[in-house]
Image (cartoon, rainbow, N blue to C red; front, side):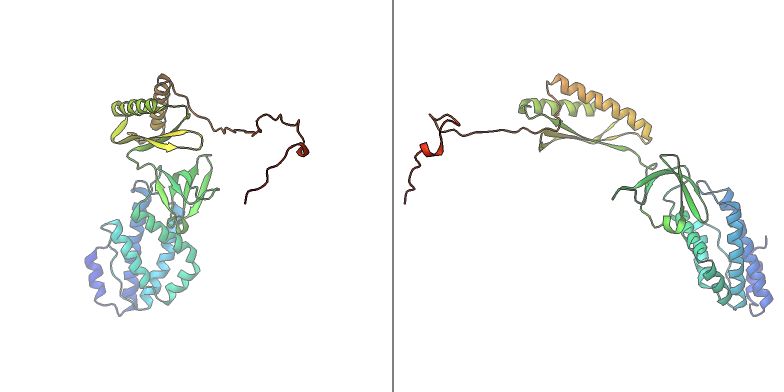
Length: 309
């Protein structure tokens, strides 16, 4: 591969079209090397072989059009991913008339590639990581899946039902993405509903025992753990348990959550309290005048008092 010194020498004689076209070919060579590195050497970022060469061909015509238009060409900086991306943006600004025609014809492809550059620079997700993305079938619900592949044009995500969803990178880079794999701990937050027959003394003992249970549990972060009586619900007295489980894998969290639920049930049973279920109590009251049986006196037999003025 030709070095940067030769490029600098050729830059001094940019008036010749052959020199400008040679510079374009040299830039193309560096882009090929960069693409092959991205395809084979970068963890969490896979590029399909056929799409990479298609992109190289498109960029070749753009660079050739830039060179023929007489614009100065600078060497591509491949020292870091961000510097390379900045060089790509600079290349786009230098595009001449010939490159503009190709860019308009391949607008969708270029938009998706720019989305790929954003994903490559920010790295919100990598291959093999689990994430929330976009919106699900219900309002406010996000879809969840495991990233299978991040290509030049699209990203493939495998959902919980094992189906594959393919999203163009131009759209995917604009979605709200929540990376679940990068969590350092998982939140355990539950509300206990107790019956209204629970006394204040029983409530105090329950709170004390639940706090002690969390403080000695080896998988609970004691710094942010808390147990509080929330108040009077529609059909129950509510108690909230809020704690972080020291686990990053969902399967590990489920094991700790199961242990916590069983411990909470034991504490409630020993305290003599009962979990409330959604219910409603209806009170019926029938006012009857003393000395008069209901249904045995007609309206004519009762003398109504005169209103006082």
